[in-house]
Length: 533
Image (cartoon, rainbow, N blue to C red):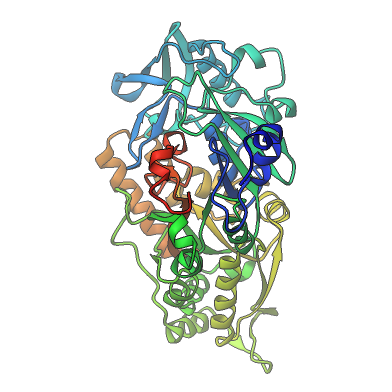
């Protein structure tokens, strides 16, 4: 056991490596160490493009609104709001006394400034259309903001989850200045204490947070790409919380001493897996080919083998729990005979080598995935085996996530990918599937274009009524399911494990971080109930 003097003297080291090792029962009393699979690209809300970055940035920056556990929009920085003129205007009433991490009070001017920076043509951000049909934002008074829309915007309240940035710091600087990204000032429950490239991020709780100081003083995020290495660190005391692979959840994580020291958590679907096809490739432009590939893949085998049964077949980009999910969206059941029939109708015939060919093209391509995800690699291997029997030959290659992201998402240099994507929990998937979002570094990197879908996505953005939006987005779901611009494979449950001493965890499909500010550490009397203490 570490002595009290030693703990004080080496506080910084303890935050990094922890005081506990295998067989010991002491961890830093004010710190929780969480393993994450990759390092955030950015923390500045204007620069976020990946799930990890969104999750970590969300602990530092807050928006006017947020999702609660049940994925319902509730107030955050805003105390309340009023929708006017049939959805063409919204007044947000801000909470008073919301402080930036440097002690300056947030006001309506900060909200106006954030909107102006996001929508400015001089700001190189992926979020330029984030606020939809909003035409302007003005400060009615110090704590009231009026947002005007050229037409009703269905995702207006969701859009204001966007992290507000500080005008008093950035008004005379480039808002994309890397120095702000590395030393951000927000209004969230945590502030950045330290960021060591390739190793960790240290977040310290804000004593002046408007919802009260978080229950955990320090959140230490360690970048550990490999899930097996994360589990080793968990066992050794270097990690308190980590997301689990299905295999770990079902077996390893609760074996032996871990069963007494840790608790497992599971929430509904929070991401989906897919085989993405580059639709600029002539081989994949015929819908019959895409449907054939979907029929050729044994999705139930992927769920059983990769997810250990902790998931369900996916029919599209919406989770089964969502109010806009369509039960009428088609599922392409495993049916190799139907796959062969579709390929033959599309003109593909086996050559002497057994590989499908048409007009000088061979159905042989590379499947890329990120090497950090063993689940993605195993999924790709099952797909490879399934397709081979039809005369479709694939090669699997892996890339480190940042290289993968640059090549695939930024440059669109790929034939096929196996990837998982987090659900947005808002039905507006305009940025993911609209034809206007197929350019370099845009999010529709599969280059899918469908005028009918574009119309629905545009109409959905203009619709405020939940009932009408539901009808529109259920049709969006059905079109994407039928067209198979990517082969939707599975809905995966959120699985993670946390040390017994951490209290207040209430899992949600949102993500593992959604309620970190409500977590706490059990006191000595509570800890006494565990023999490890």
